[in-house]
Length: 191
Image (tube, rainbow, N blue to C red; front, side):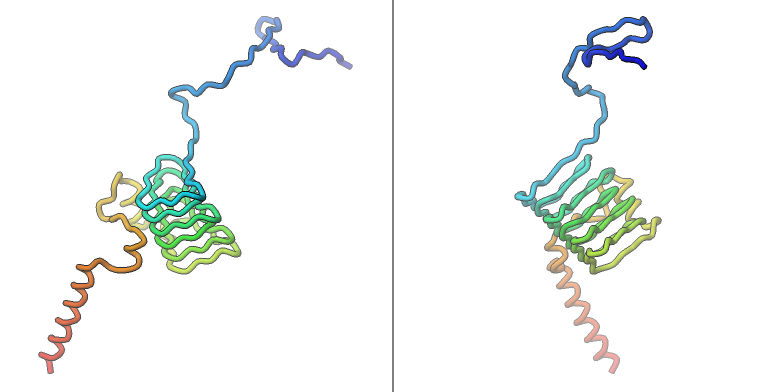
């Protein structure tokens, strides 16, 4: 019925009824424009230490330490390895984790993932084919959410690394040995 076509580079201004040729301009980032950004730790990268991120973080490599991404998502890829703790708004796990996972919103453990430790989150998805060994706390009123996600640096939450998971500090060993000796002495005195 209508056979009129417009050239591809023409733009029609309906307010004044005339056609103008549109110029092609490169897209520019505006200084105040908010855009979603993310960081990636590549599969050939190893990080030993703590990571603090104010943007989404994808880990494809190996991390030993604490990952903190309070207002964003941490994604652990299928070949990734985390030996330590992760604190994030949302956690997506496809790799190997040994430590504590704390997510304010949701944690998803995908098929093929292997998690050993504690998961604290109000919403948890364990997909078929994922492996999990440890403890789960799904109490949305857990104190850890308040202490981690409402303060900048939680005073009562020391940074933990994989060595913290494997052996207690020397002063803790000494304290336990002293407690055991005191208990044995008390038992002998009571006889």
